Length: 177
Ligand SMILES: CC(C)(COP(=O)(O)OP(=O)(O)OC[C@H]1O[C@@H](n2cnc3c(N)ncnc32)[C@H](O)[C@@H]1OP(=O)(O)O)[C@@H](O)C(=O)NCCC(=O)NCCS
Image: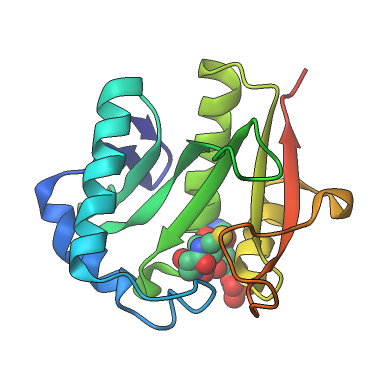
């Protein structure tokens, strides 16, 4: 678990399923993904995230607002898939419900996750990437102090050639000395 000023990054629980499924069915939240996630896919991803955190002690954490206990989305760290051109390595990612945008929650949670990666996991670097059009996600990368790395940009291997989301832009955070 990671606590920040306004948030807790924790393992997933059954009550997250409803708001988690709802945000994955929201066109605005999923605008830069190939498709919405159905309820079954959302449940499977919740279970997979939960199992990884239980087994390893880290992963894509559920983000809860400390004030009222509301589930807002996720932020966390994931080993890169072997098929990713940046592999091997660890990426940071985030996805929040629309009502939770514009309050600095994603950046606050991401700073907590980066600190965990550097201090607890002793990672030398953490990467972030997204589709070229996902400017809100890129703004988070800038805000939390990651460095833009144009030389590492790549075409996402899971997307068909020429897909509008194919090109991905890359940011990197290096462990503080
Ligand atoms: C990407 C995403 C997490 C960004 O969320 P966000 O709320 O814009 O990001 P932040 O938490 O950094 O919040 C920054 C905004 O909060 C505002 N803000 C308000 N109070 C703040 C505070 N106390 N501290 C910091 N920022 C604050 C900032 O001014 C900024 O507003 P702006 O967007 O109008 O410039 C969100 O858009 C999302 O979930 N998108 C869909 C999923 C997705 O694409 N994920 C990434 C895939 S790679």
